[in-house]
Image (cartoon, rainbow, N blue to C red; front, side):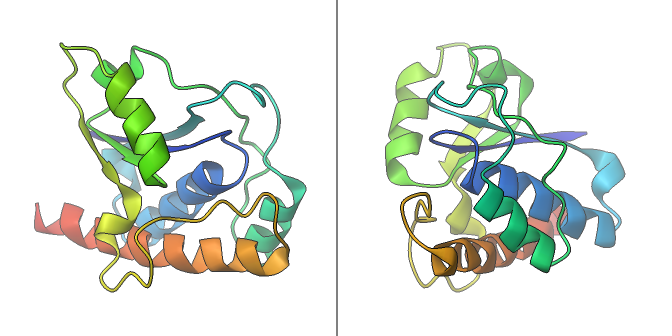
Length: 155
């Protein structure tokens, strides 16, 4: 079982989108039974809330369902429970590294490092932008998801 945690700032836009997209892609690849997936935020502003309505609408247009997901904050135990913790941007990766306990067993990285040809290095936060930002996030996450699946398949 490989355990993967997707992380952004508030866990209402990028990381729940990454969780849902990756879950669907892993299902299609026949890998879902070998994975444990979750998402979280480094901040606590939205704990318990559903994903942003714009993120849910953009995802639904591509067949992804975010409606069951609820925001939570990264916990110290996550660094022991997950094998791979993937941040959407460098700021959140820096926050994760500063929170990571000495006895952590996980690997920390950027999600877009798995994208075969990333047009950017980070998944931009679409929260203060328009609908195009949410579509761009989906494009980036789909590419990185496919790359991560390929990496998992290759062992």
